[in-house]
Length: 114
Image (cartoon, rainbow, N blue to C red):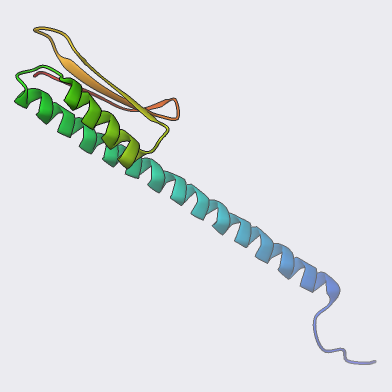
Protein backbone atom coordinates (compact mmCIF):
# COMPACT_ATOMS: atom_id res chain seq x y z
CA UNK A 1 0.00 0.00 0.00
CA UNK A 2 1.29 3.42 -1.01
CA UNK A 3 1.36 6.31 1.39
CA UNK A 4 0.06 9.50 -0.26
CA UNK A 5 1.08 12.80 1.26
CA UNK A 6 -0.88 16.03 0.94
CA UNK A 7 -4.56 16.75 1.12
CA UNK A 8 -7.37 15.45 -0.96
CA UNK A 9 -9.55 17.50 -3.25
CA UNK A 10 -12.50 17.22 -0.87
CA UNK A 11 -10.46 18.52 2.05
CA UNK A 12 -9.22 21.45 -0.04
CA UNK A 13 -12.73 22.34 -1.21
CA UNK A 14 -14.05 22.14 2.35
CA UNK A 15 -11.28 24.46 3.58
CA UNK A 16 -12.05 26.87 0.75
CA UNK A 17 -15.76 26.85 1.64
CA UNK A 18 -15.02 27.60 5.32
CA UNK A 19 -12.71 30.45 4.29
CA UNK A 20 -15.33 31.87 1.89
CA UNK A 21 -18.05 31.82 4.57
CA UNK A 22 -15.74 33.52 7.05
CA UNK A 23 -14.69 36.16 4.54
CA UNK A 24 -18.31 36.89 3.60
CA UNK A 25 -19.21 37.27 7.28
CA UNK A 26 -16.37 39.72 7.87
CA UNK A 27 -17.30 41.72 4.77
CA UNK A 28 -20.93 41.96 5.94
CA UNK A 29 -19.82 43.04 9.39
CA UNK A 30 -17.54 45.76 7.95
CA UNK A 31 -20.31 47.05 5.66
CA UNK A 32 -22.79 47.24 8.55
CA UNK A 33 -20.21 49.00 10.74
CA UNK A 34 -19.59 51.59 8.05
CA UNK A 35 -23.34 52.22 7.61
CA UNK A 36 -23.83 52.63 11.36
CA UNK A 37 -20.87 55.02 11.52
CA UNK A 38 -22.30 57.11 8.67
CA UNK A 39 -25.69 57.31 10.41
CA UNK A 40 -24.04 58.32 13.68
CA UNK A 41 -22.00 61.00 11.92
CA UNK A 42 -25.13 62.43 10.28
CA UNK A 43 -26.93 62.46 13.64
CA UNK A 44 -24.05 64.28 15.35
CA UNK A 45 -23.91 66.84 12.53
CA UNK A 46 -27.70 67.31 12.60
CA UNK A 47 -27.68 67.78 16.38
CA UNK A 48 -24.89 70.35 16.14
CA UNK A 49 -26.80 72.27 13.46
CA UNK A 50 -30.06 72.15 15.47
CA UNK A 51 -28.35 73.41 18.63
CA UNK A 52 -26.71 76.20 16.63
CA UNK A 53 -30.08 77.17 15.15
CA UNK A 54 -31.65 77.16 18.61
CA UNK A 55 -28.92 79.53 19.84
CA UNK A 56 -29.46 81.85 16.85
CA UNK A 57 -33.22 81.93 17.49
CA UNK A 58 -32.74 82.64 21.20
CA UNK A 59 -30.29 85.43 20.36
CA UNK A 60 -32.80 86.89 17.89
CA UNK A 61 -35.57 87.26 20.50
CA UNK A 62 -37.38 84.10 19.45
CA UNK A 63 -37.71 84.95 15.76
CA UNK A 64 -36.22 83.28 12.71
CA UNK A 65 -34.57 85.65 10.25
CA UNK A 66 -33.83 84.99 6.59
CA UNK A 67 -30.11 85.06 7.45
CA UNK A 68 -30.67 82.38 10.12
CA UNK A 69 -32.39 80.14 7.56
CA UNK A 70 -29.66 80.75 4.97
CA UNK A 71 -26.96 79.76 7.47
CA UNK A 72 -29.05 76.74 8.56
CA UNK A 73 -29.51 75.41 5.02
CA UNK A 74 -25.86 76.05 4.11
CA UNK A 75 -24.72 74.12 7.21
CA UNK A 76 -27.04 71.23 6.32
CA UNK A 77 -25.66 71.00 2.81
CA UNK A 78 -22.04 71.26 3.97
CA UNK A 79 -22.13 69.00 7.06
CA UNK A 80 -24.89 66.45 6.39
CA UNK A 81 -24.82 66.35 2.59
CA UNK A 82 -26.74 67.53 -0.45
CA UNK A 83 -29.59 65.09 0.27
CA UNK A 84 -30.31 66.82 3.60
CA UNK A 85 -33.48 68.82 4.05
CA UNK A 86 -34.47 70.87 7.04
CA UNK A 87 -37.16 73.15 8.35
CA UNK A 88 -37.54 75.53 11.25
CA UNK A 89 -40.99 76.37 12.56
CA UNK A 90 -41.74 78.90 15.27
CA UNK A 91 -45.21 79.96 16.30
CA UNK A 92 -45.77 83.15 18.27
CA UNK A 93 -45.85 82.46 22.02
CA UNK A 94 -45.24 78.74 21.38
CA UNK A 95 -42.42 76.26 21.01
CA UNK A 96 -40.13 76.15 18.01
CA UNK A 97 -38.96 73.01 16.24
CA UNK A 98 -36.00 72.22 14.03
CA UNK A 99 -36.53 69.19 11.82
CA UNK A 100 -33.80 67.62 9.72
CA UNK A 101 -34.21 64.78 7.22
CA UNK A 102 -31.67 63.01 5.05
CA UNK A 103 -32.70 61.10 1.93
CA UNK A 104 -36.41 61.37 2.92
CA UNK A 105 -35.82 59.79 6.35
CA UNK A 106 -36.12 61.98 9.42
CA UNK A 107 -32.82 62.21 11.24
CA UNK A 108 -33.71 64.68 13.97
CA UNK A 109 -36.66 66.58 15.38
CA UNK A 110 -35.54 69.18 17.94
CA UNK A 111 -38.34 71.03 19.80
CA UNK A 112 -37.47 73.88 22.18
CA UNK A 113 -38.94 76.96 23.84
CA UNK A 114 -37.39 80.21 22.62
